[in-house]
Image (cartoon, one colour):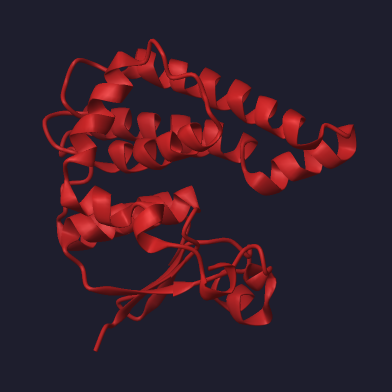
Length: 213
C-alpha cells in the first residue's frame, strides 16, 4: 500500500518540482489529480489539505506538507537525499538559484495572476503571451548569469535548483520564450533530460485529469 500521496496538477511547475524530487529518491507515491481548471483546488476537501488552495500538497510520514521548496527540503533532510550541498555557502547558493525561479519568475507568471492582469487591462491572449515572454525571459537571463560552468546548477549532480529550472523551462517552451544566448541553461536542461527521474516527472508523462482528457 502506498503511504505517500501527492496532490498534483499535471502542468503545475510547483508540482513538477516535487515529482522530480520524489522520483530522484525512488519514493513510491500515488498521484491524486487536483483539477485546477475545474476549480477543485478551491473545494473544501482540498482547502483542508492546503488552506491556500494551491498545489502541490504532499501527504507523507503522517503529515501534510505544502509549498514545493519546503517539501523538497523536508525530503532532503529526512531522507539524506543530497538535494542541497553540505556546506553553508553551497546551500545558500542553491537556495538563491531556486529562489530566483520560485520567488521571482513563478509568482509573476502564475496563470491566475496573468489572467487577472489580462482582465484588468483587456490584453487578451496576445497580452498574456507577451507578459509571459517578457518576465520568463528576463528571469532566465538573470539565472543564466548566476550559473557556473558545471553540468548542473551546482556541482556535478542535480539538486534543488535543477528541480526548479526544468519545470520553468517547460513553461518557457509552452509560451515560446526566446532562449537564445542561454547556453548554460540549455546544457543543464540537456543533462537533466537524460535522467529517468526528470523524464518520468514531465507533464506529458503525467497527462491531464480525466475531466480534461
